[in-house]
Image (tube, rainbow, N blue to C red; front, side, top):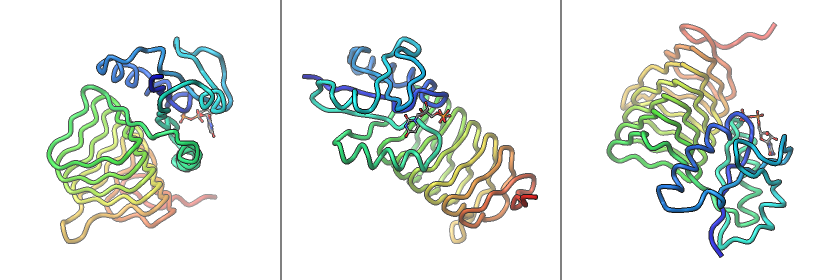
Length: 218
Ligand code: UDP
């Protein structure tokens, strides 16, 4: 028996991560047929040449160990699926593009998805099931929680703390904090695309614009 690997989620996010997963396994000499999609609502049996299994079918597959990367942008869904996988001994799997750059003293928790052209500089702590999409970066001395999601092109500058389940939209820029006074993005906050974040964002708040301010729903 050999390991079986899965990209959980066969929609936009999953189809972007699958080629990275395939390349990573190829580097390790693992055959592509040991890599599948899992989707609970599959659109097709085969997507971009990969089998699509339901979660139940995946569990029934013969394997020495089951691995899955949660490839769904919604961090709450990732948390639910992480619990489900843990209960069934499906192990978290991290996938990163070959050209990701990580500098000194960077720790990234289990289940991370790091897309092409992501850079993580030095002295950074990142929690579980982090997604950093294309061209995002994390600068020095940042602390990032669990189930945090970066859309493409996020510029997360130095001394920023991002709490669990925050979602940072495409091309958002977050101003650097100070060593004794980090800029904090609160738990579950949403930063709109293109926002220029110059001050801390309270938990659960959505901010948009330049400078970013709370979104007032009419
Ligand atoms: N999905 C799933 N199990 C869940 C929730 C979602 O298999 O509990 C699948 C869903 O069927 C869909 C994908 O995950 O194919 C999520 O796709 P969506 O386009 O909503 O998100 P994205 O790929 O952009 O993160």
